[in-house]
Length: 508
Image (cartoon, rainbow, N blue to C red):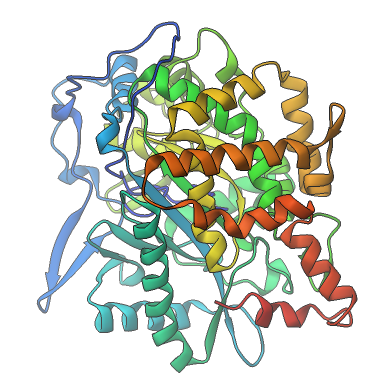
């Protein structure tokens, strides 16, 4: 999911307007955009409201626009372009933002956590470890502490959106601290957490629905635009990393490298081979699900490889992606099927005559789900959720590839002659065949060997002794056997075709 970027507004990976990051590059791209002196502050609305109840800080979800600074001028398309460009940062301010989702379950029955249990867990973590509560109405739906947040995906998947951090050591320490806190409270409740990409045992009717208004709108809309959208919402988990760029040219280079190589990340982290207790025919069912969720807002974005691509072209794409909702007066208003381009012109039938704020734009960007997503930073969205070592390995892979100039240039050289058809072929086939996917005169495994070496070299040149975080995927590359295939070996062997053992194997 996460990758889903499923929640909008202020909180969570897809939600938090994260103070993200940037870098410096030699790119030669057309229309190179100056990223300095961005100032549309007059049009920004506050990203959160704080109220106190009995002395405890509570962060209200989806800040209402009536509390916003009143825009002095209607937004223009250039404001939307400038918003993306405001993410540009010098290399020394580049950071690493990691997000991951996991499934909570009852130890005895293995059933998914109900909302009431999740609420008890969130309250317990808040009280024991000093997090602030995020509420929607009278329901707790998340937590916030500094620049970290915990949020709920539609089926109760528990997500940590980490703070922007400087090194992978900090990233892995953050993950470990979070898992310790969750476990400390959850174990007392008889609850465990599973690191896998797709719910292995339970049907969609067994999954609880979280009390978040935006999810009601999405749940009604999904079946109209694809056959697997509800599976995406309720039964998938991901790990993703968010990375900075220094300029429009740098963004373009990283976007292209990220899209071309996303299928390799999907293969290395493939970890969703079961559905409703049986093998599902995929190594990454989660990745496959995105291919029939909603074609208007997913995919490999071939236009990113056009010579004319830049911030403006991404804005044009996003303007025509159908909207889900607008948030007004403490409620979500269904605007499905209409576009942000309509909204910009004041032509939304759901709120006639109203014009958007930058908060609305920020929310809309979180409802677009390509394999790499642009906000004020880039999100690498191709990997399945997994055990904790892999939660550290995923950001390590992309930091080594994209934050080192030599590795990034080598990647662009490696993939320069890949055709749109080849990139799409990998996107379609990797969820089934992983690293054994045929590519040109060999297997994808052989490309992955080169890519892993570039990532290691990039991390070593960073000078923080971070390359050890790649050990978890080095064995996958060496053998060509994905994590999913190892689970299938266990299922057909030691587990005697009972998927229940995966809850122990992949327990955090």
